[in-house]
Length: 305
Image (cartoon, rainbow, N blue to C red; front, side, top):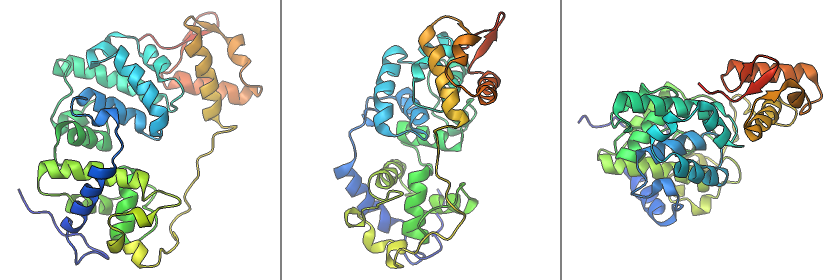
């Protein structure tokens, strides 16, 4: 295996090893006890958690995750059910297209891989609904493989500790991917532990706001802290809004359909939002995304196929 290149920037005189040990030691002591981290969780449980945790906090995911795995403990169990049932079980986690993507991945795993989540990174990446991050996360967390796992938390830790800036760019860059690869430990098992540990550090300590540097195991090495914590000078970071948006209207429409279990007339959907143009746009978007199926006679339901 080729040795990783050394990172460039404020910590170019340090190697990844200077970060690995303190962060992993911190993780061993402070990591949250989460069900998808248990040794017997299995790759499907890890995959389900990764889909659910995208843009959704752990405390909201946990009850839905547990109910999901109780109902669909294997990919084939989910694949046998209608995609609309996945949307229904998704509840109020938000971004419900993730439910359809997870259902599509379960169908592909059942048809292509005999119902077992593939171990090969390329095969994971080829599954529908699986992007670069999710493939790396499943390969790393489920199978202990050596892959850079770059979620928002990890990117923020690397931006501050290594690059010396408060926040990473809005979208992942090639430079961030190079840095993540350069910082990967040589050992597969250590690399997988490093991926989980750096992610947890960003979630609990090196947070987007009100970071707690006194609790950070690498505060003494952090380029951003040593530089006096300069303010972010890149493009403005966009805060997420919800009230009054099409997302809120879509959520209200889906809530009616989830609770109904039978086709719903247009009149029932009209009652959830007063503004007809926005309501119609939201409903059209749900249909276009495959989350809602229109039927003759002005009826709507969650998708069966």
